Image 1 (cartoon, rainbow, N blue to C red):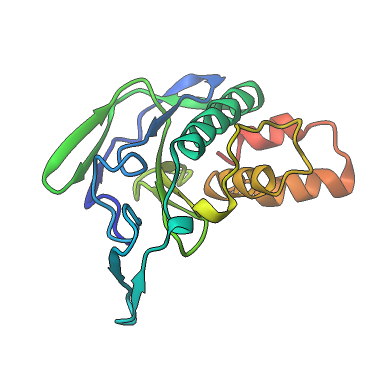
Image 2 (cartoon, rainbow, N blue to C red):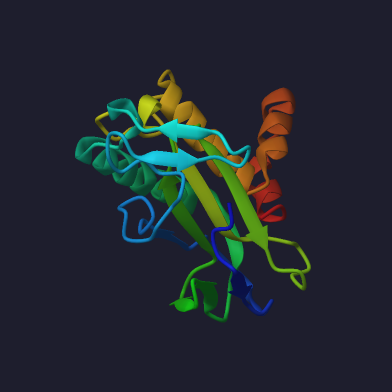
Amino acid sequence: MLIYSRVDNSDRVSSKWRPIRISVNYDMLEGKVYDPLSCRSIGQKIKLDNNEIHICENKDILTEKQLLAIKGTMENAIRFLRNTIKVQSRLDPIKIVHDNIQQVYSDTDLIIVCTYQYVGCLADETSIANDYYSRTVLARICFNPLYVPDEAVDESDDKNSFFTQFYMNLFILLDFMWMISINIIHKEAQFHIRILFVI
């Protein structure tokens, strides 16, 4: 599914390394922006790419508690990432366009768009073609209501499958999952430094 039709950005970055700045957009998650694959009511019909029709059930709809759990978990994740990752900050605002509406994000290095669908949880990302490092600029995380808990989780909840999937998706969209696996295998002390060059 196309999240945004255009992303405008320059590749100008600061010479200084700073904690990553992340902005989160909950408009699709909250139903303010239409997502054709999100169930909003029981009996709603969703047409899939293969022309099959899914009829929404109660289990496909995100509850208010689950919405708050996602937001709380995202806050915890962003705090964790800010304390873990440093980047050469972007100097210009990031502009995204969807349905001919432009949104401008200043003082940010990454925009995460959250949505939910009954079909599963996934993450995908977009970078800018002229960015030397191809850093992720706009990312989407999609949640499946069936697996979202009623309370927020953080990095201390490592036995929670929602936590594991959530952080796995964040690592994938930041393109440093392979760095984490290298660190686990080799127990290298410069893990933090190595991440700096991947983002």
